[in-house]
Image 1 (tube, rainbow, N blue to C red):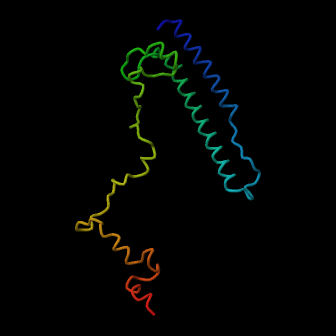
Image 2: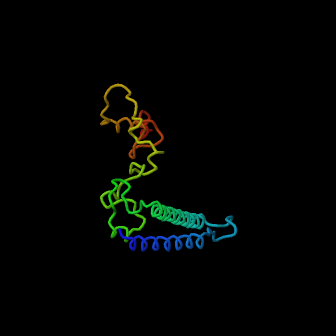
Image 3: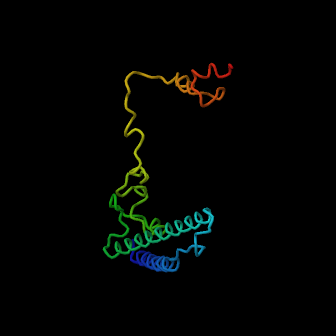
Length: 172
């Protein structure tokens, strides 16, 4: 990469950093539409909550964007800008021109840094296979499950009576 190309990218990153920081400071307001929630319909509260969550997500995205730009500017200062973080090869100028914060070449663009590519919810929620049901002895095919449940009634019988009472239920 030539010095002129590097200067062009550095200027682009600096301008982009300034723009993102300005937008971050301008948009920093989470407001509710009401002074009191006492007489609000739950849907109004839900709308406000959704709006606040959206604003927080956008703000977080902007903060991450600032971090990426600052990391790219630091790489320029360290003279490591334009080198793939995975393989060490030069990143093509066309890629850096399109995405100045790129840390990897095209071949390693989907490389996860420290993640396994799974959603974070899966760390909290256990899989159903983590703790399978205990074997209760014997094999059960569950074909007769309906018969077991029908002992407590069906749509054709009185619902609150046990099956043994149902036989005589209609006889008076």
